Image: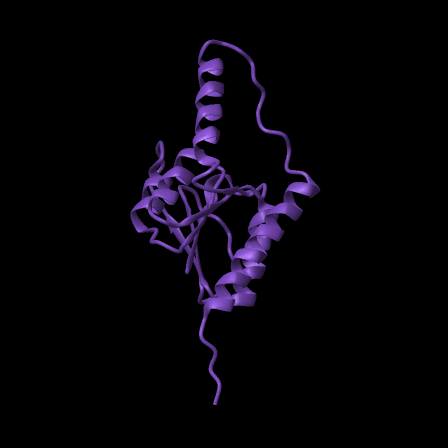
Length: 156
């Protein structure tokens, strides 16, 4: 399993949780963004800088993600495309996107976009709360633990 991070909008506190998980698990983590993201030097931590532009980072993630991978993103359309490729998608707020909830999330996103386009001030998302951080860490740890449990062990 590879872990892909839509890093342009990934909060720093979530990035720190991800880096600690990379150190603990040894899995490959790739941060994709159109601007430099500072990361510690680790063999399993990678940074991929893409050109600036609408959905460039998202498209790169979709192009590279494989079934069974995990993508961390708050971008609902990206999460939908990831699910179509049989990968998992988790938001920095701890929401695990699934085939059961992605359609309603896309509908809400499209509705809010229509409202904004018509001039309605919708505000932005709420600040990341302690509960959001705990939810993310909890879901993330469960995904990593399930992956580890499926790996063969080296027993003599």
